[in-house]
Image (tube, rainbow, N blue to C red; front, side, top):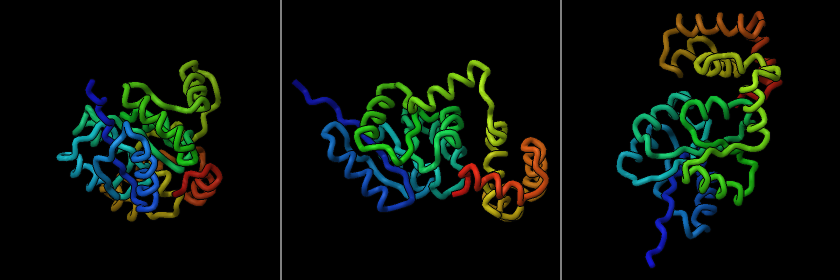
Length: 215
């Protein structure tokens, strides 16, 4: 009887200590193997061209451009590779946007190794992995009920700009990071202030800090 094929896992995180920890968790399971590692988005996309991979563990805060753009690029170039997002950010900040952009699951880094392995196996089998709390939140949104926070009303690009404004970056700095013109970023800023019913960047900084959107 042939041995079942191991699930090939690629780890994408900019922190070497985190990558090492994830590697140890994965390698402790005989049904999983590591196909590669990367510390930024460009290295990830390049490595996946040659590294046979079934599933990517993808960090939200990895360098190399906006997270959602990188996620979409990965899914477009490698549609058969599944993505499980790992993040220090609470689910209500990124999870729904990540799922819409093509991720198959979202797991915060405070979960246990056993929960990570469970999530990997579920996603590999073609399922979705979300916590019970997020599942309830998604159900509420589908039912049209519940009060949504102002930042949840923003488009994905507006959300990216808002987080950077909330971190204290200037329009010019944001334009450079997102490869946009300063005029375009200023337009997004105007829309963001209107949608979130605030008047200044300082208001956005306070909002971002209160909701843990910085970092």
